[in-house]
Length: 150
Image (cartoon, rainbow, N blue to C red; front, side, top):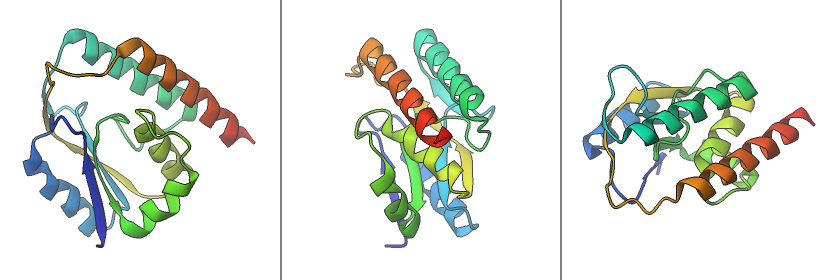
């Protein structure tokens, strides 16, 4: 395949946006990221999760000076095959921090990334445990920051 697309198992992102991901790749981008945080995105989510998500994405941008992506954790992305095959061996995390880590690595390597707005509805039966996930993400950010400084 020329492209690899993945999405979170809860299918919170409207699947009609797969066309937007593929169109972005066809337009020459290396990675296309669904974003819940763009002004034209439509989301249904709790105030707590919205707040945590926005703070997290601001933290990433402040720590890394990264402006190519507005939503690091939306689990709805498309990659050119050669790009994902280059990035995956460099990714250390295979849990929730994976989304952020692969995008930070891609940014460091100069890949072209496009954000596209999505319609997204929070799964009320989400199994994500917020505190352990937040701690894992913070540890991952520190690890990647130290790696990049070296």
